[in-house]
Length: 391
Image (cartoon, rainbow, N blue to C red; front, side, top):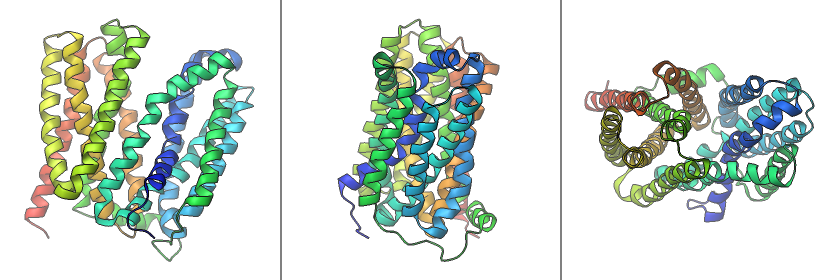
């Protein structure tokens, strides 16, 4: 297997990972139409997003150890094929029950395809895993930037069913490319998948535990932003939808730029150092955002605090994930599953907590993001203690 994969191969990995944000975001503009077409209420259609996240997490828990045991290429091809078929199923749904079942299958098979990518990057980049992760993250960020616009464009030309047929077409294209270009891999464990022992190995590694917590708390802050920002920008500051799209896109572009910079710097400085620098930046920006929220500052000040905070969180998560994967050369699939499951669990907690604090002002949202950064601080403190006093 080549040590330095081509840019085309990295783009293919990013395209595989992108099926998840595309599946989550592309159909959002069609939600009101779905409730009418499937003769149900909006609440039932909104459940399709929660079901997707739940079955995606379940799929990662199952397929992570399986990838370590049977190899990554066959699992990726199986997941992509299942994603294509379930997307076609969704396009033919005539009732809400069939639609929810299709979303569950789409997420489940999508997890099989995406869970293998970090392990492949670790095998290809070895000690420079963070560089590969940064490139994939940078390219993959185009998906949430473009997905709502793609969904809206499809609706302008046809009905909602073509959104899922478009996803099926995308999945089929990536499946064909993967069948031809995905590198052959060997199983990390030449044994039957032992799910509980594999998870016990990952979760019991003392130096990895704080890094897993860093990744989880960074994701919690990130999901706080995703959940609250429509209410903040549109509800509190009364911007129109086009302005909201521009402001949201600025955050995505900041994440892309941060991952590009990380990819260039990590070879020279290492993931551990860049994690510390990005964490320091996140602390400053989170405190600034909290101060801005406390004085009810204007929109430009909120945006100026959020953009560098999101970039800092992205660098923290990328380097924490790379350090975790380097800890588990024989269990990278399981480690990826742990990271992904905790991330989506943290994201699920963001919505209810924001609802408790209210979504009519910046301060509750800022305090929750600050609490996520505080959790990262505690995790990094524990990691430093364990490095200083290994047992």
